[in-house]
Length: 118
Length: 134
Image (cartoon, rainbow over all chains, first blue to last red; front, top):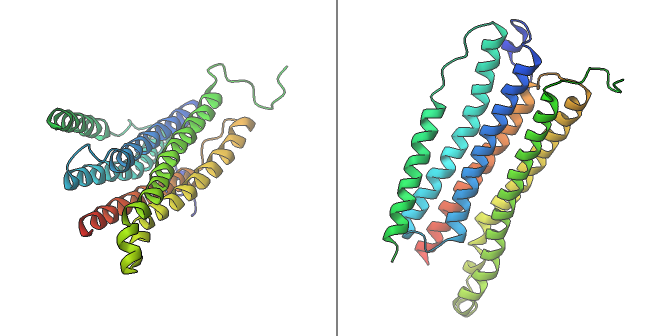
């Protein structure tokens, strides 16, 4: 795996900005890992949480969001560093809105499942 | 004054980034514990619930369910090792200066997490099928 092409264009951004960008990447990776932990915990350690098929769909969806977050976090980091290198405005990302919707939906589904639990 | 070549950053930027890597490793360890616990639980539960049937009919079905979780636990160990290597490499860089992270370091870390997610999804689907089949 070589360094990507865009890393040789433009000029190196201020180290404070590249380190902040790196920390943001790591925060998203942690979010992905946390979603994964939640999926495994519900699937394996809380068998009474929801009826069989629903639980598996929920857990696979959570883990799937975790996987896409890991991919998106790298892409987001790369796009932002590229923009910084060329002095452009940082690109708009719909990750925040997407995660807000996902977390709200998950909370809603959990609340319903807990309330309906026999 | 300063022992390092680069002057100390007043905003402690490298230190904060270093701690961010450590937090990420801690989160990874939590995921490891959960997967490991789930795997050990499935190991101890499965033979007990299936022992009567499995030993009587002689089918090895009792050994099958933990397979997905076992593979998932192995992938989790691999992901942890990869992330630990990334964190160690990056910590050395951050202790020496304020260089930006190499793109491939972050790419490897992201790919490792994707691989773990895929293994977890496979284990969940495999587990659900076996539950339905039994």
